[in-house]
Image 1 (cartoon, rainbow, N blue to C red):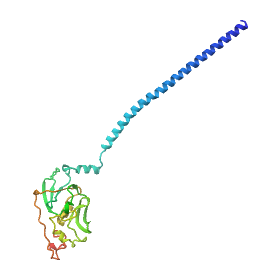
Image 2 (spheres, rainbow, N blue to C red; image 1 turned 120 degrees about the vertical axis):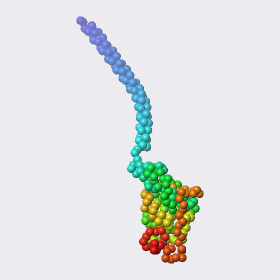
Image 3 (cartoon, rainbow, N blue to C red; image 1 turned 180 degrees about the vertical axis):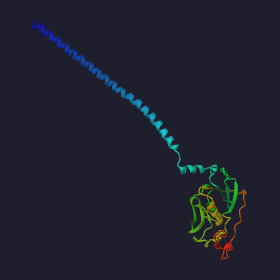
Image 4 (cartoon, helix red, strand yellow; image 1 turned 30 degrees about the vertical axis):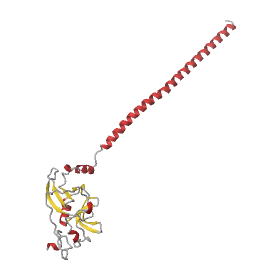
Length: 260
């Protein structure tokens, strides 16, 4: 083979190599472009699916979380409160107390063992608040005090809290001493006279203090209808009698001159 032919063959081979390389580069670029196009499309699709899925998941999670929070089991204290709320659920309370503001009478009803309070067992004469200051409604008793400082810097015996600053308690005393009774106020039993609390004789205030546990239901209302028990007539104090007038006539204290 002469030299000229060899040169022609080499040129042809070189040209083929160049063409092959160009074709390879073309296909590589095309493949890369296709991949990039697919890559650019894929994230959009995935993003759409992800957004939809995330939205659905978030909604489900939120709903589930809310339901769980609402349905969380109550604490023992809350469970007790729940059992004690509503007329039929007071089966653990031995008594229910009703106060008729218009008639200044307290009626105590006994639990029949099934949560019903249909049997009246005790009536008490009282003094409710002037100008409607004793609130109407249904409440539960809480704190108890053998002596309690009251508005006006006076004291009450055997106080039982009804709600807020409203309590059952004795007629006030000038001091925390049983021989300092405000006897003129005692003689008002049976009429509105207090700043909001429900005043009772010592005997009756002590009965509630001793027999009605915390969370006893107290219903306060107005009615002109006859109550199931008659209102007792309170003992009236002779204000001229200096020996007796400073003591509540019903106080069981052994030092009470009314007991002589």
